[in-house]
Every structure is written in structure tokens, then in C-alpha cells.
Length: 159
Image (cartoon, rainbow, N blue to C red; front, top):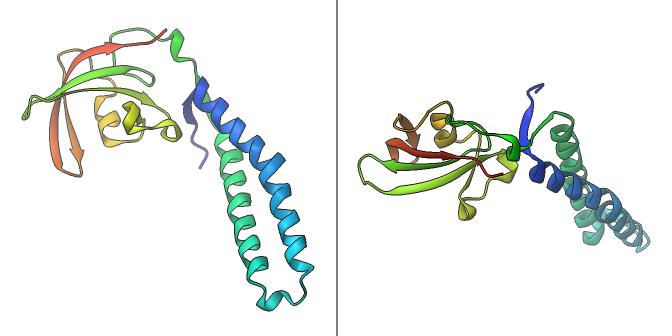
């Protein structure tokens, strides 16, 4: 669990913002809800109390997870990247060798992944298969729909 967690500057900020909100707003609110529910008397049969305690457990778990990730964060400023190799932060255009379907993905930290925005996490099979490749290279990628051969058409960096 000592592995670094790569993330973009934006991804790091988003996690810090979420952690701040959890500590400053959500945690105090749930503590107040527990106190209110406790005031209703016997907590052994108090559904409000048990629901609030369960929510508190989720909040505390998320706080611990975020603190762990942030403590191991390796923040990469993607605006300073360049080159012709696929690396973290690269925007890669590929074509499926079988279907000739083109796709463009930006490789980001796992917490930043968003398929609708074509942002894939660094630990996904597609990203792992593409890392280190250059234009013209092919990558064998195992997906839920089977193994695909993707050819790298373009490697770009924003910034």
C-alpha cells in the first residue's frame, strides 16, 4: 500500500476539496444528527440513530481513503509534458484493428477517470496496454468484450 498514486493537478485539487468538505461540513452534520437521534431515548431501537451511525462510518471511511491517497499522491502537471510516447497525461488516438473504430482517450489518475469525457484511469487494461507505445505501435488489450488490437494513431499533450 506504499505505492504512489499518480494524479493530475486537477485531480489532486478535487480530492483535497472533497476531503475538506467531508471534514468541515459532512462530519459535523452527521455528529449533530447522531446527537439529535440519541436525544430521542432508547438507541437500541432507534432507526434514525443507526442510520446516522452507518452514514458516519461511510464518511469516516471515505476520509481515511482520501487521506491515504493524498499522502501517496504523485501530482503530475500534464501541461509540462511532451513527447511521442504514451505516458500518464497523454491524449491518445487509437484505431481498433478489427472494427476500424477510432477512439481518443486521455490517461489520468484512477479517481479522475470518466468514460463520458474519454478519460481513462492509469490502471485500466487499455491504459496499461498503451503506456510506452508510440505512433504506429500496436497494443494487445484485454477488455470485457475480449482481446482487442489497438493501433496508436496520435499522441498529444495538452498545454
